[in-house]
Length: 76
Image 1 (cartoon, one colour):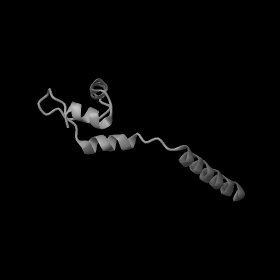
Image 2: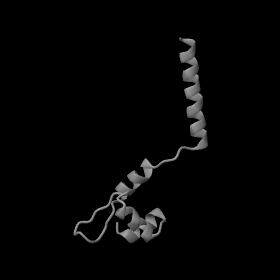
Image 3: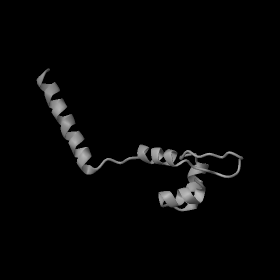
């Protein structure tokens, strides 16, 4: 994908995407040393690494953690 295609796919400005490549926060390819390209699978993998849990997921994790602590306290 070109920068234009990747920016459209991600719903962001090209300038933001260029900044991300400059900061090396997103994987990209530069085969001839000038033009920048992206692989869709790389973009999707990068997006998935930055997942934010929902409030419900956080509350469930906290509940399970409290149950575990309660069991550990009873076994001491």
